[in-house]
Length: 228
Image (cartoon, rainbow, N blue to C red; front, side):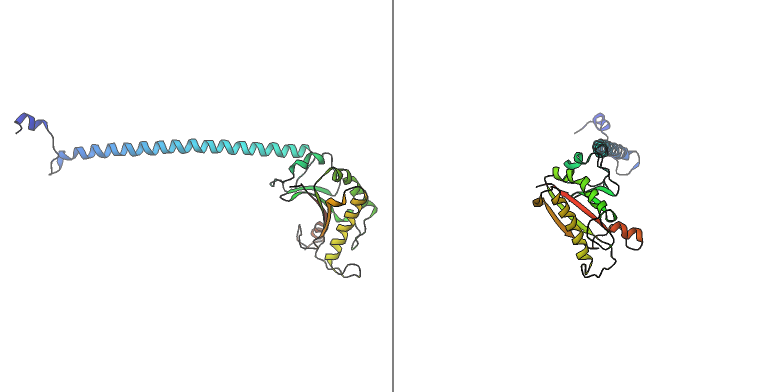
């Protein structure tokens, strides 16, 4: 049995409400503080991780910027700057390569030397012009130093051709690629590393609606691919 003083010192919640519900309010306050503390800790943790990711992203951006600057310093003006070629090690070999009508493009297949068609051939022909041979001669030293696969690819616009020599653009694009290949081989580029491909009008760079677009699509590309 508890005496009167002991009974008065103990405080039990009153089922009738009123002041007896104070313990419940205190409990909810503590619970709210715990939840707030948990959310705060979670937020701080997320911010810290986010800062680490942001720092990593910044380092990646900085590295990409440095790589781009090095490519520009090497004399390369990539057309697809967002792509990293498997043969990126070739870039220093193109230092000083500045030929009107010839551009250097980086892609996932390798590095492409893109030559405007009007520099190499007369309209509807696959025989190299004197100017075309001169353009290719300026590339010979670079191609001789490259020890990977060299693919010469001919491209046309979508205007049909029907001649005895070229029944379609397939024959024309292939004939032009072979003419370039033969010149490179005769100039000392090893034949074992050369191949010729004609794509006709199946891989346009622009629409064929205007004369300028069609001129853009008429081209020869020399694709350089490193050995695996």
